[in-house]
Image (cartoon, rainbow, N blue to C red):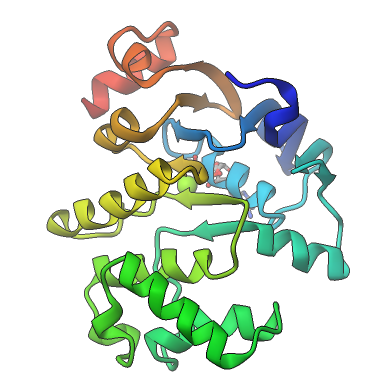
Amino acid sequence: MSDASDALVVLDKVNKHFGELHVLNDIDLTVARGEVIVVIGPSGSGKSTLCRAINRLETIDDGTITIDGQPLPQEGKALAHLRADVGMVFQAFNLFAHKTILENVTLGPIKVKKEPRKQAEQEAMALLERVGVANQAHKYPAQLSGGQQQRVAIARSLAMKPKVMLFDEPTSALDPEMINEVLDVMVALAREGMTMIVVTHEMGFARKAANRVVFMADGLIQEEAEPEEFFTNPQSERAKDFLSKIL
Ligand code: ADP
Ligand code: MG
């Protein structure tokens, strides 16, 4: 692990309730610059809430979340900037249906970052090239496969030049034959040094790309370990039980 000055995302005693439900329970998590974390755990354990809290789509009750030394702002302009620092790719593709692929990718840079259109389009085409869908740039999302749409969603997030990328089960809505084309893009991104927090049960991805696996259950981080160590030698009963169900 890198030293503390290298910390990019820091959660300190983060708590979140939904009514009676303690969905994030004293979560401490530090993600270093360039580190790739895979978060796994049973359905309902708080993984999506964790991502949404880091992206400030969800408020927290107490504790702090810091991105690159900046505490998460509550609202306003600072929040828009923070959002630009934190890219997020969801399970559902969430592209704008009535905009072309190219427009989907240039919208944020033009509207939020005030980039000139020409520059935004050049950068967008380079990103679409990188994720292997440049030849689809003038089509609409519905004309693309799920795997292609998800790769566009990744390009759209990258267009904002985020410091960290969050992925919440990015392949779980895809047909099996499309999963690898998305995971390959994510592995490449990890190898290029992007800081990533990835909720996924794709162990192949975790083994290839993750520095650390974080296992959540009941709103708690139950254990964390290097992927090989976690998958072959889980410590907690919860993790053993969970792995026996997905392996
Ligand atoms: P996971 O992503 O690990 O499946 P979630 O973070 O989506 O888990 O959800 C954790 C728990 O919080 C679940 O029991 C879920 O039903 C509950 N929950 C999530 N969002 C809300 C909400 N907006 N209001 C009430 N309960 C919620
Ligand atoms: Mg979830």
